[in-house]
Length: 267
Image 1 (spheres, one colour):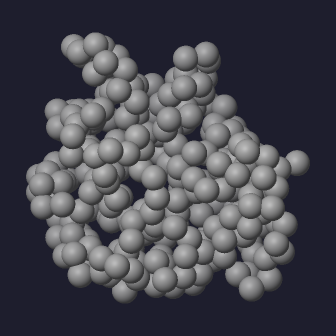
Image 2 (cartoon, helix red, strand yellow):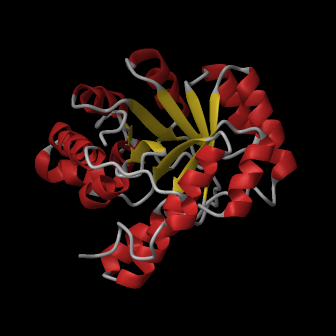
């Protein structure tokens, strides 16, 4: 069965990381966003962190004004970030956990433990016309909390699965993929739109594209790294091809019936 189009959001944070290492305006993340869109990206993701380690406020303003596709603002659920989002009004906002000491987002948001504060942020962003997603692990308690909070979208953290694939840990990779598949199916049944991201490469993106319930992947660091060798347009084009190839073999799996060593194990 051939599924619907799987959207690709390209995260251009680390173009800004390279720029900030030396200062100035080169390389320009807004230019990178335009290249990614021309190569097949359906949208652009950028994370405005509290410490502004890569993307800065002006980048967000320029991205919103200049790109031809939707802007997804990754952000912590703080008063400062909610105020910025309500002013800029990106198409979407993905609420993520954030700690200054971390190199990257290390885990999913604890929606179950932060229901009230997240409910306020989701409500305020939604009132501004911003589509909100919660970046969470594919765990029943987190999915139930996301639905109760009123977030229309979740983004499943795929980091543990991707790390197991890289390590060649067949058992863990199989278990993690099964957890993602069950979570995606459960979230869809609860009326949530399901996205996924973190640590994905060409092979893992092609594999996860087989899950019909997932409608969007957000990928950044890997693509910017591959751009060093193949150019950004080439890397995005290869990712688009891999995702389309996986989508052509789509499968819809009931949460209770997913075999343990389903897709996602190391060959």
